[in-house]
Image (cartoon, rainbow, N blue to C red; front, side, top):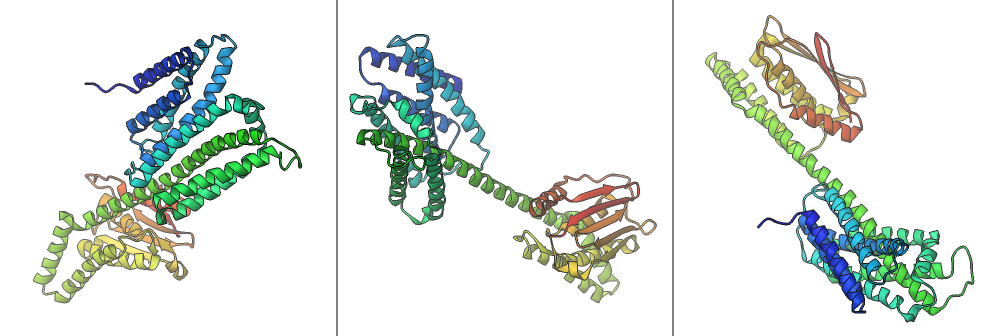
Length: 457
């Protein structure tokens, strides 16, 4: 059986909201819990559809229900301007609200889906937060129902909302305390149990809402000595709880996005580094390299040049030792890189004889600076790969530094058949330098020369 599409799900739940609102009004019973439950189910289904983690889904449930409640009140007010039918206008309002909220939720989840790293596994802590989110929304809806009853008839809900949002100082305090708590919770979360973590969040909600309600009730810091009733304070406290839930969810979502993006970028860097290391290792152990190295060693042994053969073996081993030593390093000193380059160059000179020359003019003070591992060696390797090398037309490579950059230049000797290149190594180096120095590598090519400048770190 074909799985229903996202649009079908939203339309079905919009119709369910319409029917629930109409039936409850006809039966003269409250529809708050029924509509809230339907909104929670819709949010969970969409989160599952977009493969979000359980904790992320809990925050989405809070945002969807609170924003849906506020949006629904606004839409109901507009529809009531055209029809005040006691059954029709609330049913139309909840239908329109569900449609708008559903598509907004789809856009929101689609933005986050797969964009900030892989889906997290659902642990016990995350399941706890899903239960807390559902319980919080249901409690808020019950309290709103009480507010709409005769118990709190002194000030209307809309007036209380206007009063609360009109106090910028209270909102600033709420946002500031929430940011501080989320930062505190992030640092302590792995060290506490889910029960203690839930108690901390609940306490944060209550204290922040209590303080915000007092600030609004006394109209601080704009007026002092203002009096308000206990009923008015309870109404402001509930408004503060709703606002705190929304503020907490939004700030959490922002922090989640930033942290997840950083984690995704960190994983991408690790993956790029692994690909680069694999490429580098592949170049050194590919059949051509090993075939040439073994042929050179065989020739040295047959010619009785045992000492030169031993030196060649030690330098070949040095190449692998350098790569193994720095496989987990993101940067290395220029001095270490140049030692590696010299060993690699010596092997090339044995292979190409008079066809390859390397000139290095590095300032001593630049030797303590840093570069990306194997970056200079890769440029030399690319030069031998993409150019013809022969004693008649030798490949000349020069390496210089000026305090800001290290420059690698080689003359261009077109090959009869061009070598294929994935560009992975150069792209990795370009990205790493851009991230670490804010500067990209510079590539210049003329008819006779190819030059690459790498920023010194």
